[in-house]
Amino acid sequence: MIEDDFHYYEPANGHGLPHDPFNAMVGPRPIGWISSKSAAGVLNLAPYSFFNGFNYTPPIIGFSSITAKDSLHNIRETGEFGWNLVTRPLAEQMNLSCASVPADVDEFQLAGLTPVASRKIDVPRVAESPVSFECKLTQIVQLQAADGTAISSWLVLGEVVAVHIARRLLNDGIYDTAAAEPILRGGGPADYFAVTADNRFLMRRPR
Image (cartoon, rainbow, N blue to C red; front, side, top):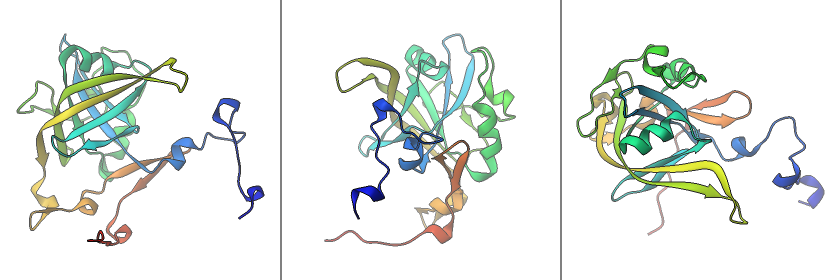
C-alpha cells in the first residue's frame, strides 16, 4: 500500500473524524465491572473498558479511571475491590450501572442487581454474574504524558485473591469462554461485541 491509502493523524492535533477511533482500534476490550465500597459502607458498581489482566502469578488485574471517580476513591480508602464478568444477559444492567449519579447512590440497586458477600474481602460481588474475582489493591499509578506531565487518569492494579466460577462454565474442568457469553466494548458511540462459539479458532503455540 502507499501512504495515500491511510488516514494519518497526530492525536495532539485531533483525529479529523466524526468520532475518536482510538477506543475502537484498541478493541474489542474486556469490561472491568468493578464493585467497591466506601469507608462509610456505600456500595458502588461501575464498568471500565480500559481494563485487562496483567500477570499470572500472582494474578493481577487492572483498570484505568479516567478522572478520579467513586471506584478510585473507594479502593484507595479500603484497599479492596471486586471484578464481575459482564455477559450478554447482563448488558442492559451493566449499562444502567454506568450512569453519572451522586456518590451516595448504590448502583447495585440502580441496576436491579444482587450484592452477595465475598469470602476474602469486604466488598460484595454481583450474584447474577457467573464469574467474579475478589481483589486486594497492589498499586495506584497516576498516568503521565510523554513529557512527564501528570494527567487525570489513574491505573488501579489489584491481586486476585479469590475466584468464583459458575460450574456450568467448566467443561471437563476447562473454562468455556464462549459459554459465558462475555461482551466487549468496541468503541464508537455505542458499539459492543459478544463472544460466541462460532468466533472460536484454534492455534497452538510453536514448540
